[in-house]
Image (cartoon, rainbow, N blue to C red):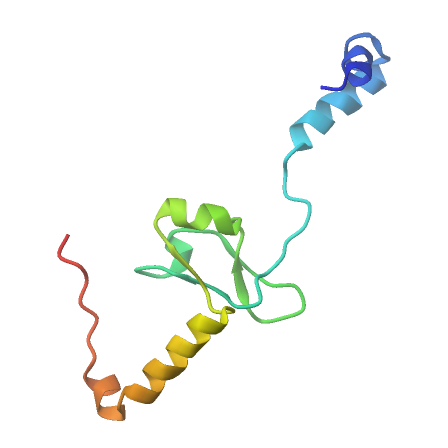
Length: 112
């Protein structure tokens, strides 16, 4: 803590001490929410089983209430589809996949 604030916390008025105590509690908390332009979270089941969700401001998109960097630590996959290479791979996959193949595809989990 900054020396002046530490001194105010220890020797200041009761009101100053209370404000600084509350500030320490709030320190590091999320100030605002944001969404990634092409970020997608993928999970094995309904995401509400893993993370809290809400509707993004001014849209109908569902967003997680976790920071992106924490999503993978709980076992979910975070994909960034904004990169040109990723978009090219997706485009190529769609072009190379036939309609019949889409209907015959079945999800097969890893046998881990």
